[in-house]
Amino acid sequence: MVFRVLDENSNVWAMKIVRKRVYELKDASGEVATSLSPVSEPELRALQKLSHPNVVRLREAIEDTKGVVALCTTYVERPLGLDRYLQSTLAKNPDPTGKKGIHPFSPQRLDDACTFLAKRFVEIVSAVKHMHAQRMYHFDIKPAN
Image (cartoon, rainbow, N blue to C red; front, side):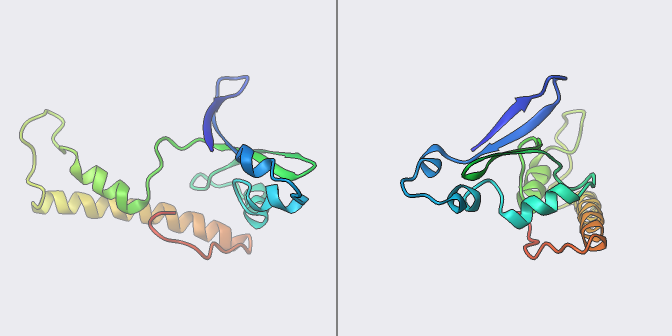
């Protein structure tokens, strides 16, 4: 479960917490809450090491005797996979004056979509390059991530 929270300076963060039913499992070893926590142990270690504008930043990991039970990270407003984000962007009227707008398949609209995609790819490549420089590898790069 993810909640939008404010810190003492009114900065917005995402608080990701393990579900109560998972946390309260009977006979649960310390590995259960950790393995079913908001991120895996390798992801947590990577988030602790990485600092890049295109990578979610870890503010804090909250632990108890069962392991990591919550994470506080950068808040992303309505996160969408790249494919959904592109669809959403293309569905909007590109004309800010509110007129009929550009035809969905016009050369200008397609050029705008390509420009949009190129900018997102540059952001992704920048983040992946930074991770590789830290000797970290994602292994699951796809539009939904």
